[in-house]
Length: 272
Image (cartoon, rainbow, N blue to C red):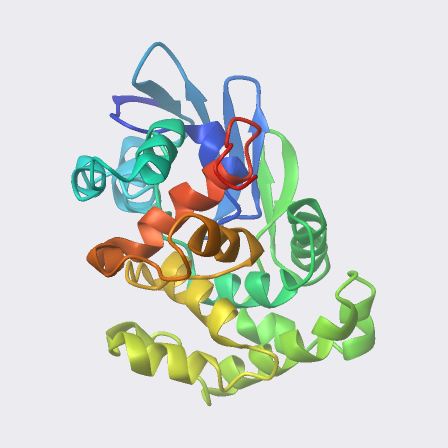
């Protein structure tokens, strides 16, 4: 166990934010499978957290995963005082962070996400892990790592359909086969400029700019990437009169996450 003090970390908000699909809430914390590992984290008194792992694992895996080396005050500071919507969104979502997740898992997860609710995405992603991923033994029993490109590329379209992927099954298979064969080198793309990264991700069947932007933001931490779903489109139209503010472009992906989280909450009255 590792106990640490962390400013601005809201585990429940992150679990509900739509950026990760293998993190679930438990009493006073979350449990998750990521990076081929299982983790539980609990919120203690204010700004203190307990990680069920070794200090070495915390420092080498989870500190980066939760983006704990970043002071999120820099994002709050860039928001105009007169921008009432985003000021409230930043306050409501205080503790949200952009996770550093694995690009392949993000690519597959957001291909699946098209026209699916968050609970349905979680179910499909978990099914893929259980059918094609490697088992991980934990004190909670067996969990499964997200499948590697090679593991998933060996699946048939019929097997993928059994995980509730529908028309997305052929897109998932195309992505897995392209990555497994090296035709799409996700590791090399980590060094590519944003425009090249987005362009290359869209060479996968069924991947448009929204899925590519989600993969760039949540899998490569490209903070300028701006995924636009129905909620963000509504915000842009109703709050910003059809144009995302250019002054926010440097951190568009981060601010988008706060916008998305706030726009869906009952307290938000800006979109009525």
